[in-house]
Amino acid sequence: MFQWLADLVVKDWLGLSVDTRFGSALHFFIEDTTKILVLLISMVFVISYIRSYFPPEKVKVWLQGKRQGMASVLAALLGIVSPFCSCSTVPLFIGFVEAGIPLGITFTFLISSPIVNEVSLVMLFSIFGYKIAILYVLVGVVLAIVAGSIIGKLKMERYVEGYVYQIRTGETFIPEQSQKDRIQFAKENAIDTVKKIWIYLLIGIAIGGFIHGYAPQELLVKYAGKENWFAVPVATLIGVPLYSNAVGSLPIIEALMQKGVAAGTALSFMMSMVALSLPEMILLRKVIKPQLIGVFIITVSIGIILIGYGFNLIL
Image (tube, rainbow, N blue to C red; front, side, top):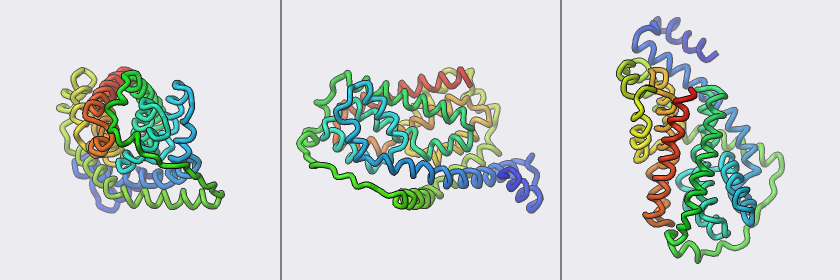
């Protein structure tokens, strides 16, 4: 249906050929915009309804007192359906530490939530299909668990700012929601999500369309194809200081892959931008010291590089 609509606009209404650079770029833009918007609204509504059962307050309560291994797995899985953005980094971190949740488990949740949130899942599914989407979620969960476990074993609690341990937030009250409340929450969240990200979506798809129509395929294959083993770490390092999210980056990743960039290289670039965004690092500095931020960046970067190589081998 989405390809039919793009064909209708580009070929029939505008009389352009998709074999031309501009026609190919415009076709990509129209098809991806309509496809992603429809899937985004419908799937965010469903996931938001599920997410209404997992507010951060409940996540904190559920993780308290759990055994290390079980808590790590639970934290990574809850990160998938829990709301997370850079602005919530500090309050989430303080709440987890104040509740006595070990540092490693706290970082497991903080890594899992931005990497495999509902928007990135929807975008991956809509662009690459369910196989890559599921595989991405699995490796994202494993990365969160392993990186969190490494940070936990290093016993770096001394690098958390002292005032964090002195905060007492009091007993958490978690109000129950009716089915009507949950549906209303899902509806409002779907609308709010689209309002927040539509401009980034259009910018990302526009860039992707430009790459699709104009980027030289031979050059991209040469420097970012499977044969270039240096492409994955370079892509990861380039993505670390940048700031983006799945909405803006995935259409670009799609276009790069269509031009011959290896899947693992492209996804490593995206994961480093999402998991290690500059705003998040700046906000984390308010609660943890540079030594711990450095360990966090290095550990996650190494994990992303290994995941990139793995994707390149199997896809």
